[in-house]
Length: 171
Image (tube, rainbow, N blue to C red; front, side):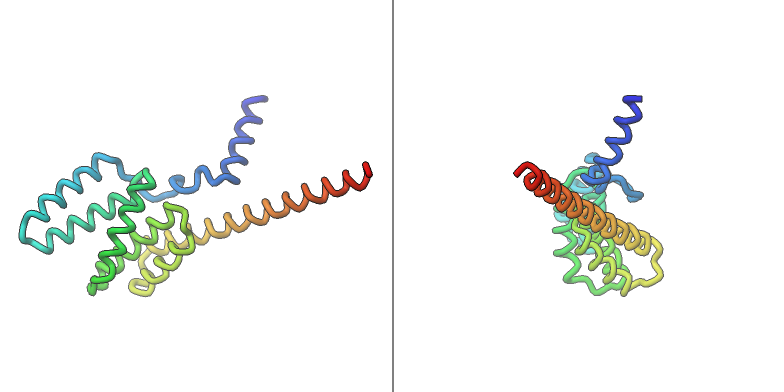
């Protein structure tokens, strides 16, 4: 019985705290070993003369960073992508970068920025299923956060009314 109550409490508290929010999604995660490998690959490419290889390595590292389990890596990936998206003229590369920016912001909890980037991505490639899936996840999180906000506001009003009622009765 206590275990059931504990599970129910954990479920409710994780819903309201958003504890499962950032990484409990259907998007893949990347570990530190892969990120390290991408960093080494980029370092080698920067020593060479092949600009195309360097851009590919930056893209792979950016992908790995926004799929990381750590917030700092995700932020680093976002920064790299924001710097790279400005200079890109290829629709395919732009699509990928906008998607990764949207995913990075989604995973870092900035859902409105995430929505802005995914909408830009879908302007480039409206039928891209992967982007449509992310857009749905973003919209679901925005709705969930709105429900949580309303719940908190209603609870706060209830507490204030309760305190006021008790003060009136005792006074």
